[in-house]
Image 1: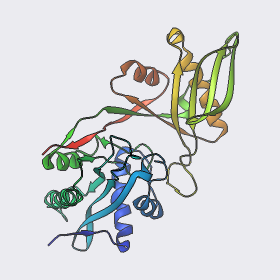
Image 2: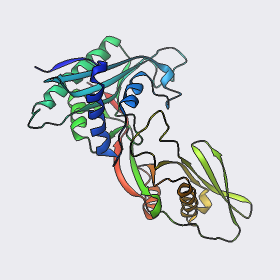
Image 3: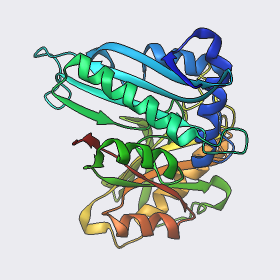
Image 4: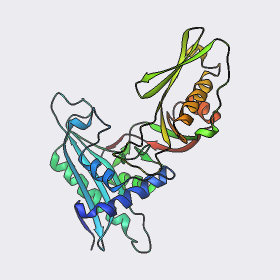
Length: 302
């Protein structure tokens, strides 16, 4: 009989295998180490704003035939005034993963539902104000509820979770396919430190027109995700409204790509709201391709 129980350290290899199967369905060639998974169960260092608000963390697994076929990580947020209003006194299924039915494990959907019942029971014992859900695995670009996980979406929906947030489009480009820098009279590009990485600012006759930021620190030594060594993140791409139809986004992406080639980066990840089709089209025309879509913001309404 399947057993739903707290995570044990001896589960670490099987849990990592299950996590990486879900990561690989979203992002080609990407996987995370056992240490990365274990560290993420203790804290999320990238979430320097919200992570200190967490008062309790619980990881549950569902085991069948001594194999972990489903797992979930839950967070409880404090109720004091220091916590942001949207998070205050709430509980969250930070991620939920499970093996789809196979010949060896044909009843994993039922097992996943049992694990979800245990998650909801834990949230009920916490007596939180609201219950949220996500799919934020410790890998670049894997958050929300990605479209390649219909089996996870089905578990959420059967349990009473509903999508109440936004949908984002993840785009990926090979740096080699991005535009090459071209000379434009009166244009200069300056490199500085930005909010989300290295910032490249384009100016026309000394007046700033727009900027782009790229983050090349996705493969920090303490993470060691396989496949992320040549990966960077497009943090910000901003063009002054009066110049958005003049090809400045393409020029900035060309200079960003030139900088990334010097850094040995091979792929660039970008994000856009599904409600911004023009911004998505500009990225597609510059060499990006749509990787997937992910639905953010799930709330339990049962």
